[in-house]
Image (cartoon, rainbow, N blue to C red; front, side, top):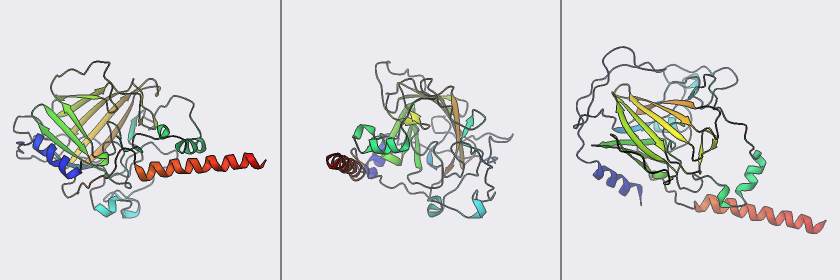
Length: 312
């Protein structure tokens, strides 16, 4: 299905939504809103209004650097006051740089368990052996519950946007990357049974004041998250808090004792960007160009290795 048709279908699903008047409050780029009137925009049915097109261009590294933090221009958030990466092409808002997207543990590092994993050379070789060694993203199936637009940040790459839509009892997060949508029931519906396992998990939302809290469970033992393997023990707790008319604070706590030594927290600031254009993400399951190329190279390496053995 082309992205235009899917977008129209989603809009039809959540049609009838109304936007009430907005009350804007200033925020500090580094954290929560200062004391003052809270964000008070509401939907026609009374929920906090988070609807819009959001991006997460950001110079903040995912994990903290072992060296000194690079100084950036306070107005543009970029080194030397100049834009960079794909963000400069879109002329979209860029969040000021912070220490790291990972905010807990305080050192800004994901607390991975010391699990055996292949070296980079071994991993690259495996990609040519079989499709099962490729990620779900490589295979154009899914980028997972957090997708590319919620936590990744960065100023390069593409497909950094998502559209957030609401209807009574539901929130929809429609991501540009992999053109997938998360339909999140809000308001007390229980999770599905433990025998049901999904690649993006089973999400359930609730309102805590003006914060949308989403708990996601029932993952399949497939995919990657935070640089580690996703397992069926994964549980995510996400918090969306709209700070003012143009800024949203997104925070996720990641629980997976199989992969991580403790829960860790990532925090990202999202910017309302109504001028951004979400393009079709023409990626289909199988990813013919990438997947076929990788496997063809694997067969070439097999032939080269076989030829070496026959000449000895």
